Amino acid sequence: MTMINEPAHTLPVLGEYDVAVAGGGPAGFAAAISAAREGAKTVIIEQTGMIGGIATAGLMSHWAGSAASSVLQELYKRSTVPDIVEKFPWQGTINPEKLKFVMFEMLHEANVHVLLYTFVSGAVKEGTTLKGLIIENKSGRQAVLAKTVIDATGDGDAAARAGAEFVKGREGDGKMQPVTIMFKVAGVDYSRAVFPGGFEANLDVPKGKIQDLSRQALPFPAGHTLLYPSSLPGIVTVNMTNFIGIDGTNADDLAKAEYECRKQMDPIVKFLRDTVPGFEQCFIISTASLLGVRETRHFVGEYTLNEDDILASRVFDDWVVLRAKFNFDIHNIDGPGLDKNGAQKHFPNVDGYSIPYRSLLPKTVDGLILAGRCISGTHKAHSNYRVMPICAAMGEAAGIAASIAAKEKIAPRKVGVKKIQDVLIARGVKP
Ligand SMILES: Cc1cc2nc3c(=O)[nH]c(=O)nc-3n(C[C@H](O)[C@H](O)[C@H](O)COP(=O)(O)OP(=O)(O)OC[C@H]3O[C@@H](n4cnc5c(N)ncnc54)[C@H](O)[C@@H]3O)c2cc1C
Image (cartoon, rainbow, N blue to C red; front, side, top):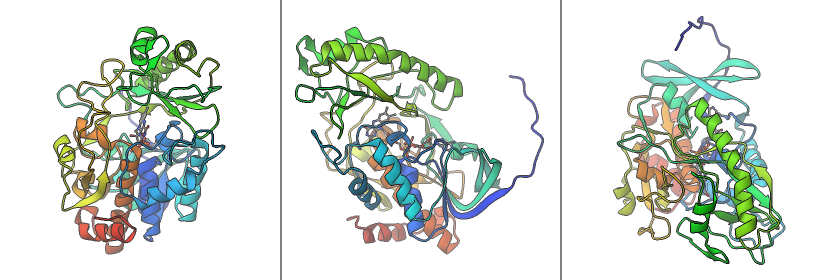
């Protein structure tokens, strides 16, 4: 690759904050709210035009799994009020249009400085300590300084720019889970519709078994049927585009995945019309504006959460997330369906597990806390904690930790974990 030298230049400092949160998905949103409610001067920096990440721009169907989090409970109450209830299934169903506003409103109420359409492109460092972020937006290139940075970009862009050590994907070969563009169809007859919500749901439809039929009819690597009811009449969320061999931190790969997933949409709609009861008249009404990337960087933290911790429902002394519950949701890395190491329906552990503060702390960079799907964990553990409620619970804890670090003028690594736990308990999290 040809290289050029970018001349050194002086940047304006947009502001000096106690806490700067990179990324406004479920983890970043909860982190910013949480820090601000503890009195920290907080900024959140998001590349899209909305808060919510995969939950909103990713057009997500529902909050899957659960974890103990007061911010999440409040968000559920405020955002999942039934709309025009046809078959309103449960509180976790997302109306992304409502969620976009409620998340923004909650940040506004908490006095968080919200920067949208703003990309975190670099790190301000002194020695091994992160002191702030370089950001780019319509206003130009600027710096934001902060006592603590929380990286909630999903991919860990801020941590990577700061030089924190990471691995990508699966141990051994670095392969990452497939990507998906979610979309919604309207015109579904709910009185006859079926909703296969997992790969192991090989439901009977008039022409045969639904997952077998999808494998035969859809263009590889698409080939499974995942359909989720919404809170709006006749509208269903479709999680069926599927593309493999993509690195979500590579710009060319992102464009390739967008193209390939969009190419699959018409064949998927044809399949739904031909095969699935109630979907005969369905048509696309919206597609996600943010590609659904399931897995990229796993940072090397002070503790790497693993699948045994999850299966044993281990409660760490330095827990900051409690009662995290989900299954090992590893999509097939080489095609459609579930990976042989994944377990959805028959997942053995239903007790819930904890996540230690150490898994949020990168080993080699100070002044930085990780939250969301980029924390320190194995490929298999990640497939479990990557769901949005668990990511939001991590964000809540990260925000509390960062606010304590600011108040006590100490590094996040030095924050007494008991203090984080005390705030969580005061907010209603029961140990
Ligand atoms: C297709 C798909 C289906 C899924 N289904 C479900 C489901 O049904 N239920 C469920 O609970 N979970 C589901 N998940 C998992 C879940 O959505 C994600 O793992 C979760 O959203 C991760 O939360 P996060 O906050 O870490 O990251 P994200 O939600 O990815 O949010 C990261 C945010 O950071 C922003 N960002 C990224 N880089 C930068 C940068 N450099 N500068 C500024 N901003 C940046 C992004 O725009 C985004 O808003 C699904 C995931 C995918 C991809």
